[in-house]
Amino acid sequence: MSNLPIKVLVPSLPSVDQIEPYLRRIDLARVYSNFGPLATGFAQRLGGLTGANSVTLTSNGTSAIEIALRLRALPNRRLCVMPSFTFVASAHAVCNVGLTPAFVDIDPVSLVLTPEIVEATLPQLPELPAVVLVISAFGAPIDQESWARFQTRTGIPVVFDAAAAVTALSHVGDAPVCVSLHATKVLGIGEGGAILSSDPKFSERATAMTGFGFMGAERTSAIRGGNFRISEYAAAVGLAALDALPAKVDMLRNVALAYRTKIEATGRRARLQEGAGDWVTMSLNIIVEPEDVQATIAKLDAQKIQWRRWWGLGCHLHPAFADCPSFGLDSTNKVAPTVIGVPCHDGLSAEDIDRIVACFPIATHAPKVHERLPAGDLIEQDVSML
Ligand SMILES: *Cc1c(COP(=O)(O)O)cnc(C)c1O
Image (cartoon, rainbow, N blue to C red; front, side):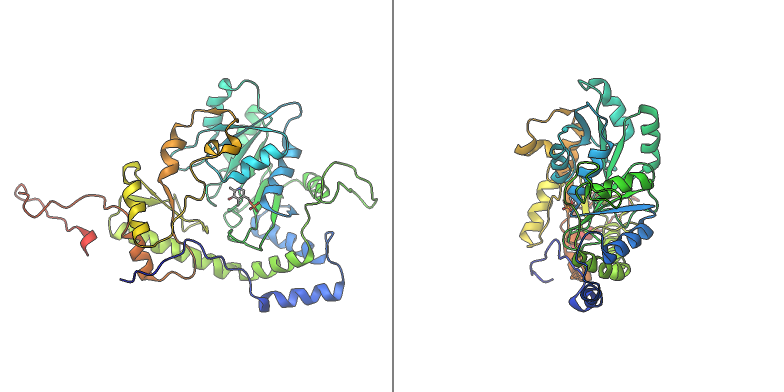
């Protein structure tokens, strides 16, 4: 087998040729920003893709989360309950809008916060939270129904950070869903984001906040906001990215399924995230047992296979968030080190995937040749030797 280095992520955005027809429309219209025709068309197609009634485009995923939190957080409360296990952008967004993260645990199997975890933690909090920020794990679908019931039951609003999950949504309910269009996400446009909602009134306010709070035709700041719009040039890339999306989703699905097949066929003590391949991601993870972590990453390193802990070991361990309170992070501390981001892009051959999967431990070790077996037992071959 080859010993060439393998990169963990190689983004692919639309080519100049794919973007060009849209750029020509900008030349003709001579509108360059401020909710121009391309941005409007892009927002509409994004709504079609995700099943959202209304779409607010933003300059990136982080600003989408900030705006959604500003609109949804209950006034006069300080805390935002959120999992520590997420990309640090989520915690930055919470702090930027003046809230304090209250870091809580995740379910060790699904890797996400659940309503049960929040409800069990509520009595430990010094005060009622302003909002709960729920994260999609690396692009996995989110359980919007059970969070809608949580919202009704507790009166605490929910915001979804579904940054990597734009192709894993089939509908959008009452709670806003924030997505990222960063180059490293499935629908990458370079920098960009969106807030998806079922409520046109909410989206009208969110969209106004991306453009200095102007509402209606007058140049009057009705609410506080800023400048979080995308230019027509970014929207041109977005429209071309939507054209190319079906092929990209197919490619990512095939990579995930190739991993799944190889992991199963060679009996690895490792798993993909639940359903990975049914939904797609640019940051595919293989999850191992805690005792297998060190040996696995040593093998990957020795093979020059780049790997990454996309979310690190949790926000609570970053110096920037060291002073934020946390409430029981046992599963986070146990599981975060075991989530290993593996190469996932269109440059991988079947042989590359064989080489990567071979770094992961075998589920059961075959008896050594000199070990005596009880009569009648089958000798399983050690597939790592194949
Ligand atoms: C990518 C990501 C973000 C940030 O999105 P940007 O567009 O880079 O600002 C936020 N949260 C999660 C979970 C992400 O994966």
